[in-house]
Each structure stands twice: as structure tokens, then as C-alpha cells.
Length: 336
Ligand SMILES: O=C(O)CCC(=O)C(=O)O
Image (tube, rainbow, N blue to C red; front, top):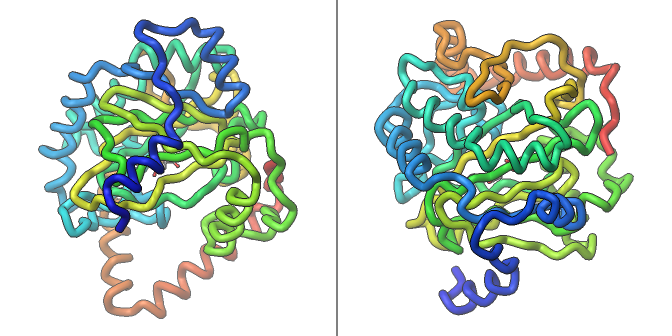
């Protein structure tokens, strides 16, 4: 673990200057976003809204023994807690959670992600109103590998999706800050990453991407973010989270990925067809699954049981499913 002053110096060097008081003109924000591939906006979300969403997480979600879809593995799993009691793996797609069990968390979480300043900045950057296609909530740090969102999800016009990460509390420098490689949206993915061959969830992708990002010459920026601040980035900007050096601190935060609402979107690098949607504060939000359904929860429980009692059977079933998906993905578009 680094000592406090070394860490402070590292992060001070990586911090962009805070935006001056008062909202900056949208045209200025857009210019900066296009140049750097990311943008920090201070005080974007009302602090009270962030507090309500965090309280709902603590009251409804954290004590729950339900299965939630996880970003790290793409599977439904119960919470895993860090040594200091934080949920290690983020929850994926807050909009898909059961409203009966987690109604307050879903309502306040989606209010955070569709709040006024996010809507107006998004519209300025996207060139039209945004549609939300993916969301997450973080408590602890899964230590997200360096990646380009576009290798997983994007607008059908590759490069036009925008991510937003909202600090729901003051984020400690050692809590695993969100980082971007500034300007990496303008650097082509190197051929050795071979996305037509490499699964972007594989170790090979994660190692190759980390290595390339370091060699890219782009500066690693891990801004200080206080409750209500947000950072936005292009789907082509390489980003992730720093290692945790202060395990007593959480990094409560919401993220969302927006596309221009007139666009279709790529999910797992495929064009998606029709989809269900809800609307919150005028923002259309794609729904992917009913995470609270009896079928989803039962399947997850069976999978957990197999994992514990007959891992060979589970491995075989998963290999079969992967094979079937690979066959079905003959039409996958190659991302940049
Ligand atoms: O905060 C993190 O750990 C990473 C979030 C992220 O990669 C995303 O929202 O696209």
C-alpha cells in the first residue's frame, strides 16, 4: 500500500482543474469533450438525490439475498462483500431490478441518472436527446480493467455512445478512482487486440488492452470526484478503475450509457432488435431482463448449486452455450 503523501501526489498530478463556479456553457463542454474524450462536470446531480439513492441501497439492496446480474462475470450472483463490508461487484441494469423489492433504490437511482444537468449535457454532446441503454451501481471496487465500452456496447454508429459516472458520495483517492486515458478515443485499436478472435471478457483482452493503453502515450487521468460530480466519456475512450489502496473507503456511484435516441444500439457487438423500454424524467431507458422474476432467480439458484456440487456439469453447459452464441454471432459487426 502507498503512503498518504505519495498517493496524494500521484492523484494531484492526474487531476484536471475543477470547473469554475456556475454552469459552463454547453458549447464549451462539448468542445472539451470532443478534444479529450472525457469531461468532468462538478455539482451536476443534487446531493440530496445522491443521499436518497445511497440510503435506498443500504436499506433495500445491501441486506438482500437475491441474485443480481453482475458486470464482472455476466452472471446472476448474490452479493460478495469486501473485508470492510462493501458489495464488491456492481449491480448491472438498475432498471431491471424488482420494483416490489427494490422500488426506492430503482426510483432514486434512475432519478440520479436522468437528472436535469445530465439530460442537458448529454443532449449537447449527443446532438439530440439521449436514450439510456445500460446502467450500473458500484459500492466497492471490482477494479475494472482498462477497456473501451465500444467493445461491449455501442450505438449502431460506433463511437457515438457516451458513458456517465456519478459520484454518489465523496470518492476517496484510495477507493479505486475511475480513470480515463485522455485522448484515447482518437487512437485506433491495435490489430493485436483482434476483436474478431478475442472475447472482450477474456484475460487475453484485459492484458492486451492494459498493455496497449500504457504504451499509447495517452495520459492516465483519475479525477477527484465529490458527491454529485460526474465524468462523461466517449465509447471509444479507454477507462477503468484504479486499484484500491484504502479498503476502508467505498466508491458509491452510478453509471449509465447513453446513445442518441434516434439510433439503434449494439449489445455484445450485435445489432439489437426490438426492446422493451420505460421512461423516467422523459428519458427512454432500455430494459433487458426482469431480474426479479421467479424464473431468473430460480435459474441463478440452480446455477449456484451446480457450481458448488457439480462444477463439471456447469462448465459443460456453459461451454455449450458459448458455442451456440459463437455460431449465432456470424453476423457480428467489427468494432473500431
Ligand atoms: O467504475 C468502474 O469501475 C468502471 C465503470 C465502467 O467501466 C463503465 O461504466 O463503463
